[in-house]
Amino acid sequence: MSAGTQRVLHYYARYLEHPSGVTDSLNHWAEASIAAGDDVSILAAQPTGGDRNEFAFEGVVKTIPHWGRSRGTWVPIGLLRELKRGDILVLHEGWVLSNVVAGAIARIRGARIVVMPHGVYEQQIVANQRDLLGIRARMDRWLLGRASAVHVFYGGEKTVVREFAPSVTRFITVPNGTTEVPADAMWNGAGDYFLWIGRFDLFHKGIDNLLEFWARLPQPRPKLRLVGPDFQNGRAAALAMVDRLGLGDSVDIGGRVTGAAKDELLASCLAYVHPSRWESCSIMLLEAAAAGVPSLISDSIHAAHELGPLRVLRSVDFTDDTVDGQATLESVAGNRELAGSAFDWAATEARWSRVGTQMVEAHTALGLRTQGGLRP
Image 1 (cartoon, rainbow, N blue to C red):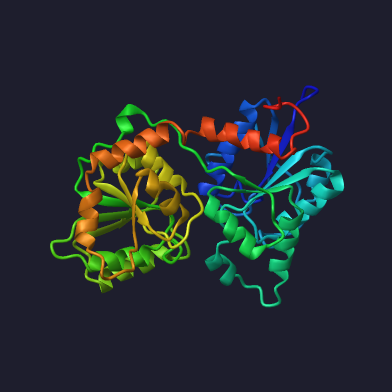
Image 2: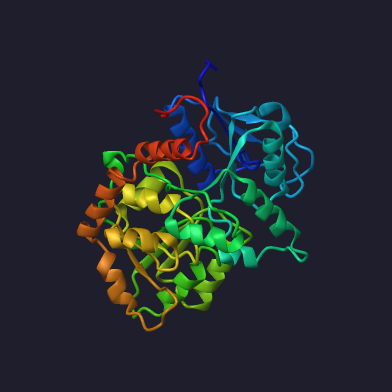
């Protein structure tokens, strides 16, 4: 590392366990700091399970020693050697002892703390924490209150964080970004199905609401494909709902898709549907926009309020049985005007190169950076 180079360390203990929206987002934020000339590391625990993150950032990720046997008990003792005065330590997600300890070590070592919650302080998540004595909430509030800034993706998330931790006053508001999609993976709408891609978390991802919405549609119902990795037997629960609601002729459920298979599914769908009950800043939704796919999302997530007015997508309350579901789907299916707006937005103001620069500028404006980068 040369003199005058800002050190930025991202800590996410589970980073190497499996790929996710969080790890994808983290990779891009790390790339943004590298583009600014920073010395960047991603610090993680050695994985304990059988899965691995095949998209780990080679040459940047580093495992550090931890005490404890699992996510709930990990203590990142290796940070004592890694952190230096003036470093920026970015802590991802929350509700884990390891992040709180990491924050305490950062304060001891004179590093600046930025917490990037990725939506973990949404009311539904807070309400469902197993925290009878409130100890976990107090620890996270302690951490948030001592952070130099909390990095949220949309303005509405500031209210969410303040409701949980009223002492937080310094925010960075910069969303996840988009990457360029190859010409052969751009949306063509040649298929006959609507598409959802994600983790089979039946409640969080609103899969139950989507299936009930589909059951209310008049016959013959359009085809719907749901694909993605399993989560706590959520795929089996979805299959059971399909059977119970009599949707076997219109709904197809499959496993995780990646690469060319995923690109083809997205390119050929009539539209992408995203029924999450809550969401911070969905990477999958951004991928759909980048490919020029018309999208219909739940009106309860931040993107509905941020991107709806820009005509990047359309939103609906999937739980409202007075909604004309057929007309709603027809308004997005094959909608080339909506697709064009999504693509134009994704190709300009939403690009990672642009939002990454905004992040570095925000660090500078808040006085977090002590060296290099985009400092004037």
